[in-house]
Length: 245
Image (cartoon, rainbow, N blue to C red):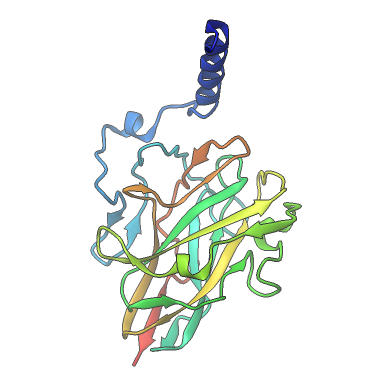
């Protein structure tokens, strides 16, 4: 039988842990009025652009600010290395982040979305950090992490899926092994290749929430956060690919 004193200790520990993961300020719902998220809470503009900003259940958001760095703070980027390719030819896409608003330790998931083109993931193309080097080399944002290695999904787990809005999506995860928390840093999270099987202009984006959290990270204590801006429409980088027959 578990003693009452032990039960009280466990309840106190759980309360402390949950308190540590709570936001210290008002949520976006509290400051802007109640917003009811749909199955996929991203807003889609007339031209197919995805605009982040609605709070997904269980995800903490922070205000987006601009730093003097290469990327906007607390923002996700999906940048194609080529803006024009032929059907069937691979193209590399770099996913980067501005300085996150919270302590960044684990990249739990990033869901990349495609507005069309019938994409498919190119096997063995996932590369941690910046393009080039070995696939699991600690570069990009991970350069000073001290990571002894990385856990990444098997290729079959990065197969293209269809989300609740019938968009093509791919889920990615990068887990550093024995690393330090990255505070105040920005850079490339990972990069990968896709090939398209249909012609047209393909807009790249992200999804924050679709049934469960899709693009979020966590600190060393396991508290989870979402990027403040996942719109991928910042004007200083390409965000679309023209696929030719």
